[in-house]
Length: 161
Image (cartoon, rainbow, N blue to C red; front, side, top):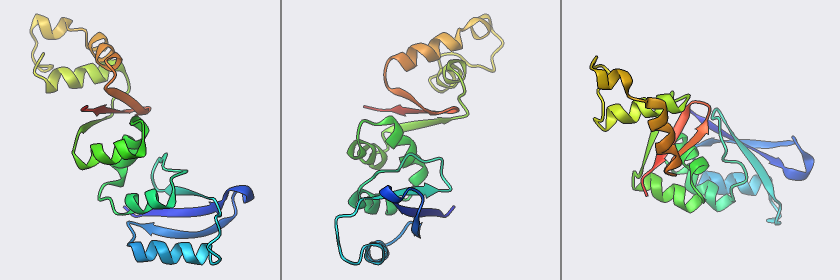
């Protein structure tokens, strides 16, 4: 997947200043920046990473350079939504201190995934325990613990702190 960076002046709303495909080299980013800002003035830019359901808007240019070098921008985007800061998200990504649960639309789905992953209950087992285990309550309680974060309607990120 190619990610495209669109840059717009904040005060001109949707005036498109150009695009840059990610990942990009430092030279490509610097060349792109010089094209947009030849006077090297302190102009604030807003950008949107299209092709992602992204929350990477409002990063600084230096943060953008770091993001452009990442191998997994999609995971970083989800981590960035779950973490308290840009630096924490980068650290979690580099140290693989996270788990992303896709297609978790409810506490039940989260509890089901966690029970299976941790070997608490085998969901495929037809025993009384498996039939009566409260996956929803388990998922909710784990989420209340604070290390699980909903980042969109069907994705949960667990931060291993």
